[in-house]
Length: 172
Image 1 (cartoon, one colour):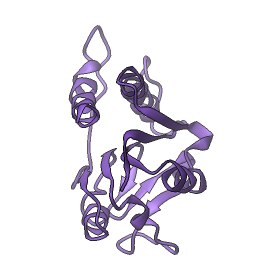
Image 2 (cartoon, rainbow, N blue to C red):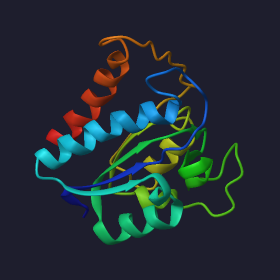
Image 3 (cartoon, one colour):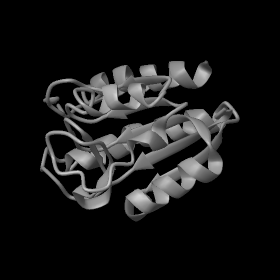
Image 4 (cartoon, rainbow, N blue to C red):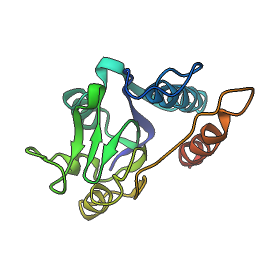
């Protein structure tokens, strides 16, 4: 049984698609949201395993999931129908499906609550995780289009929504 007070947070950050001035790239925006969620988890005395930037890769995520045995897995990066990406768009977690997945590792997410901010991964990866005895998979079915409007509190609209779901799960 996964440990209830433990979370693994996978938060890559690299220059992907330009979005504006305050956040040069979409990944900067997602990383900012992730910072808030990690801080909240620490405040709630979660045992936080924060894999950020160059540490947000498949081998390190697999090691942390196996070693820490968290109930909660948070991911903020790009995705596809059957994949969550890590640093530099590398495959982090995948299952057989639309995109090439030579070494499926989605079963690493069994017995866990997954909260991901990534496009379309709930289409194939989400059901595969649930079939592998995942507790829940919260992600997106279609591609997610966002606009990062700059200005006081404007760029916080999505942040508040996305943080709210993760914080509620951390709260239990």
